Length: 197
Image 1 (cartoon, rainbow, N blue to C red):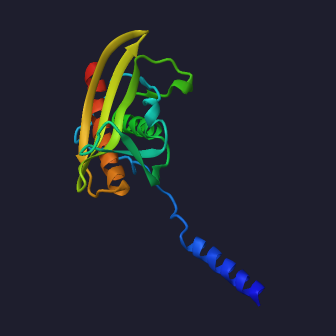
Image 2 (image 1 turned 90 degrees about the vertical axis):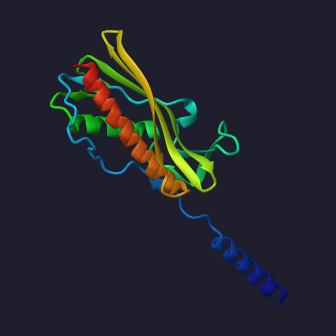
Image 3 (image 1 turned 45 degrees about the vertical axis):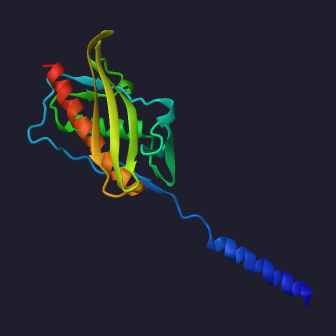
């Protein structure tokens, strides 16, 4: 009888453990490509778009947030939410698709085996959800871009885009970061077209 009681207790413990299983990880991307410019910039010549780079701490699928009201220098990541790919890869894909949609010239990837000048190089220096207060956050995207031709720097720029988060969680952060990334890409397209005019 005692053996049956022990077995029943063990079964109950296993059932309880199963009931506290962690929820599945939710994955996000930037959503479908949209063109936000009424008058798209038209590139007059081909451009090679290099893979976007990031600092080592951003080179993962983590959705990063910062609590500015405590210590803005301490990045954290959501446990049960992440990007489907590192932000640099998502940004690269979106940038190339948007450039293709806004130019009659060619957009080339380095691996295409086609030589084209200039090369657009972009670094995501910051890509995080910043909480200014527990009930208020914003997406912060900081970009540095360079146009290089024949080993010579043609132009360089850096800028920041911010968007308010619609909710104070990973879903709100991902949405705001996607919108800020889209605005940054819009600005990159305009800058590239203006520089190559």
